[in-house]
Image 1 (tube, rainbow, N blue to C red):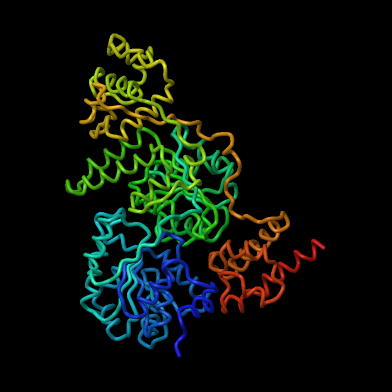
Image 2: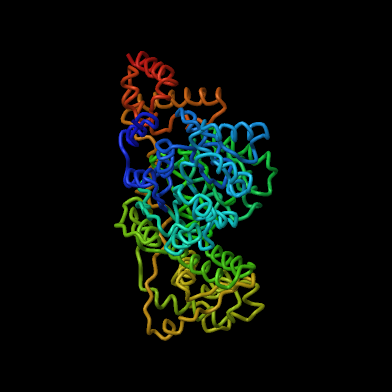
Length: 604
């Protein structure tokens, strides 16, 4: 009698029960049903196709966009005793031949493959000679031009339905708004399948947005205070800024590595390997880095520039805390960021329809940055999900005070108008504050009626006011690349006093009551347990280095935390730890039980 999904979950993966909709999705796919699954990063999407792959006859084909993702997942499955392989450009001709032979002979449970290779006629013929158990299409948002990471090669995947109509397909993604979901269903021909939308909330991630003042210093303060010794990712908009930031962090004594498409392939691979296989490494990257990175113990994701959209932001911040332990998403937002993003949109070669989509996405992102509401509420609302105030974001911890900003808005809009709607925020604020700059004198702007009328607010407050006015469309950044501001189409009602405006008071970057160390990564009760945890990490690292694999494919930090708490003394007790299946019990129990025993002897 074939093993049940729950038996496989316990025996192979070492978990006692399914979470959320996992069991329903798995039963649906095992029965031959097709599905689109939206589930947050770290929510257990992979199990939704890995367990059906072990329950159904034949080999499961997993479509994955990145080599790094394939290699990580294959190694993790092999550690569990699952027969898995990856066919990609990193495989030698001989290795590819061995894998294809194993597929024909029924010697593999799962094969990971890039979409370009999958859709070659040779590979499709190979599949015809095998018995595909299912097709899993990971990162399915890549098929949609509405999405944030469109990949044209994904468009061909609809052919699978025509060539293999009896083989179930499951498409999976962590981020897709309504239009993107519909696009995925249409392009992959999944109209007869079910859509499973798990809650997208990541309660272990703390969201914070701070005004940009000195971004590098703010970043260093954040890491030093909250995440010293932790692994993290820092995103920057340009390659030059990536290089500059990484070098600066190294000069401050941190282990930081740059990653962007302009680096040599070998160097990128080396930096990615260090990030995955070492502890406490920070990668500074463009968005070229991260999609599919399976490292579960990333404790923070920081953005020094605006991401492309809320989908991109959710996807990128979701790379933190995949193990379910506490993590932070830290965004440093400046007024100039929105203008640069608009310039990129308007200067692109995309059709007008796509530009409209991108403008809408940018407006939603700016609204998130400038909100006075719970950040998690705003973020999840964007994806059509209701949520109560979370208590785990900067605004919930320190609610943003607001004020009637109608008069301030009128002064700002009037100053923009009087200066000719062609200057950036800095100069207009100088005029409002009655500055004596050379530019003001040269232009005669000290003669304007708006000169000096804004002295009741500080420069920092005016910067916040201008950001908020831009976010709600009352000010429009110049798209020609000169950085000037002009009046938005809805400003007349505000100028005439017919529309009242409430603005948030820009709080101090970090209130005193929040200045405690927030990482919360390892909530272990006693100092002795923390010592044991570090000893277990050291043993895990040694075992990983001996095998040439990332430490987390042996055990996640969450398993080591439970190990440090429970202090198992026998293999029976060790077997009850989360994440310990039969293969890992046989392979690692002796090593880790020895560490626990040595620790206990020292404390006696």
